Amino acid sequence: MTITSELRDDGIRVVTMDAPPVNALTVQGWYDVAGALDEAGRDLDTKVVVLRAEGRGFNAGVDIKEMQHTSGFEALIGANKGCYAAFKAVYECAVPVVAAVNGFCLGGGVGLVGNADCIVASDDAYFGVPEVNQGALGAATHMARLVPQHMMRTLYFTARTIKATDLVQFGSVLETVPRDQLDEAALTVAGEIAAKDTRVIRAAKEALNGIDPIDVNKSYRFEQGFTFELNLAGVSDELRDDFAGTEKSKR
Image 1 (cartoon, one colour):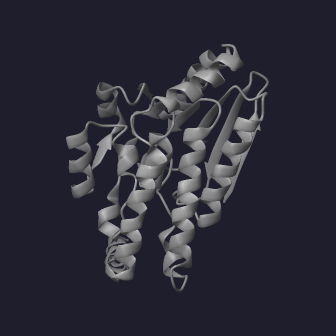
Image 2 (cartoon, rainbow, N blue to C red):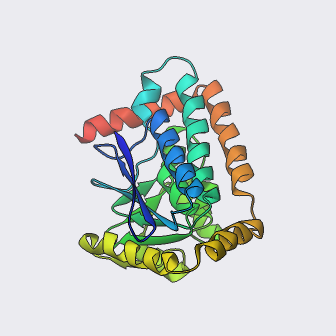
């Protein structure tokens, strides 16, 4: 698994997630994403960040196998803290973050994208928060930034997904393009931002966060508490075992 960060000559920093086969990140992977975004914000030569991924999809959330192969609650607590750090780093990055979403964007992926400042997606991209299927809760805070409230609740309770092409009508996704044009589309938007006075853009990012009606960090942390309760009750382990069995039968 690799999280890379490359600063281009035009001030655009490209952060790439590459964790085959589905970009489901380990605890350390989430912290690595957080570290890359924190570093980007501190670097005054960075004017804007493009957050992208290699492979079949943008992000499939946390690495469930890591939890299944770890005794006790260490992996769960680590994943909770790692996701919190990564989502927070995207939101609080001192410069705007443009998310370039390809394929699936699920669970923790929605947490990253929902906290981004601009979203460009491939026309085959889709979003979902299937947490209830696995006895976990989280990322409703971030899905609520992508769709209206009742749509968010429906998606959350049913674990359905929604296409990126449908999110354009809500204004949360700027545009969808063929997958082979995704990087170019994201870099085009990022280039427009990078062309501005970076002092103004950094001030604007701080100002917009300051007037946000929802404290996304506090809201997400509240959600996470219910995941821990479900684990204490044994519900999460049961559902994850059922989920793993279903996935095996599919193969």
